[in-house]
Length: 204
Image (cartoon, rainbow, N blue to C red; front, side, top):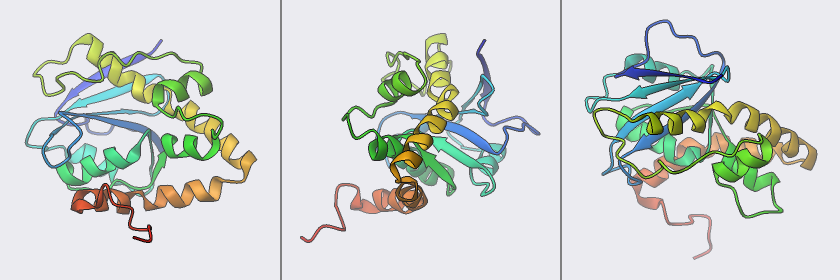
C-alpha cells in the first residue's frame, strides 16, 4: 500500500532516502523566471512519497542539501525543467540526474509518446491519472487529489528507470543517455539564460 507523507517547508531532519531518489516538482506554471516552485516530491522507491510543500521563502536546508548531494542519484521525468526550477528558485545545482524522458526517447524509438503516463503504462504497468496536472499548486492546503498526483509522479520512477536502462543497454545506447544526463545542468542553465528555444548546435 502506497503512503504519502506531507512536509511543510522542508524535509525532516535525519530522513534517509537512500542513494537513488525519485524526484519531481510542481510549480505555478512553466516559466521558471515567473512561476514559483511550489512542491517537491521524493521517493526512495519503497512505496512512500514524501511531498514537501514549500513556502515562498524557500528556507529548506535539508531539501537543498539532499538534492545537491553528488553522492545521490536523482531520477526525474523531464529533468530539464525540474533542474532549471531548482537552480532558479532554490539556488542549487541538482546533480547527478537520470531522466526517464530522455531515456525513453533514446530507446523507445517505435513510438513518439514519451510522456510519463505513456511510459509508466508500458514499463511499470501503471495507468496514472493526469487530471491534477494543471491546478493551483500554490494553494495553502493541497487537496487529497493533488497529493495523490504528486505521489504517482515519483512512486514508479525507480521501476521505470530499471526497465528503460535494460532497453538502453540492449540497444547499445546507454553511453549516449549518460552523456545527456551529465549535460542536463548545463542545458538547464542555457534555458535560464535565454537559449531555451535556440539550437546552438545548428548551422544557422
